Amino acid sequence: MPHHHRPISSSHPMCGALVLLLICAVANPAHAHTEAGVAGGLSSGFLHPMLGLDHLVAMVAVGLWGAQLGKPAIWLLPITFPMVMAAGGVMGLAGLPLPAIETGIALSALILGLMVLFSLRPPLEIAALLVGCFAVFHGHAHGTELPAAANPLAYGVGFVISTGLLHLVGIVLGTLTRWPAGTRAIRGLGGMIAALGVYFSAASLGWM
Image 1 (cartoon, rainbow, N blue to C red):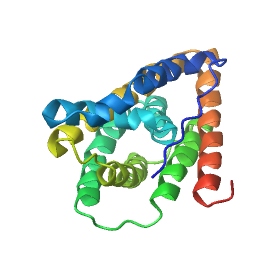
Image 2: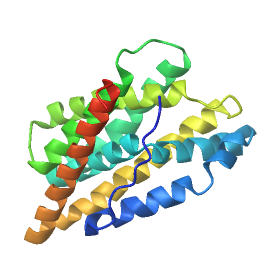
Image 3: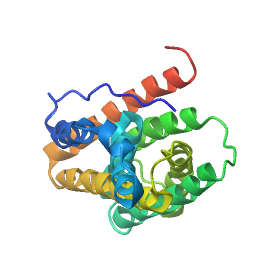
Image 4: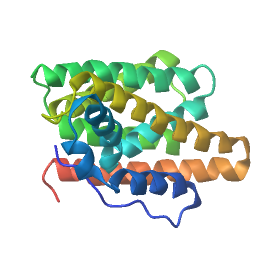
């Protein structure tokens, strides 16, 4: 599926880490996708979640929401997402069909962004189920787009590690909720993610 490369505005203080990640990610993507073997597969898999803004913001949102919910969600949600995403990746590699992948990924940014914006606190089981459902779409997309030259296992390890680091970015930013100003900033960042989710959703449906 096509990725969206429009940068997040760096004018918001909470977006600095995301912008830095994007700059690092796009520095040399072509080279990473042409490498062969384990090293090529690992680097391609590591960079892949960062090359699509729809993937990136959803994964950061998981960490933000987990931080808002506190223990044990702060760790359970970022663990659930990569594990289920890996299963979705296997589905993609196996060629198992999954309908509306682009829409599912877009909705993940929209809904997770809304969760952060309104600081919603559903039961832990519901939160984990929601994150897991979205992870299937992200994983399937990664598995389907596996570069032919990459080592499949190394590629999978790379994108799981990358996903975990993006969750960690969200968790670190989410710790700012300890202060009133930080709480407002994080909720504002959730609103930005939700707004991007609206754009992604409209694009996936051919409305833009």
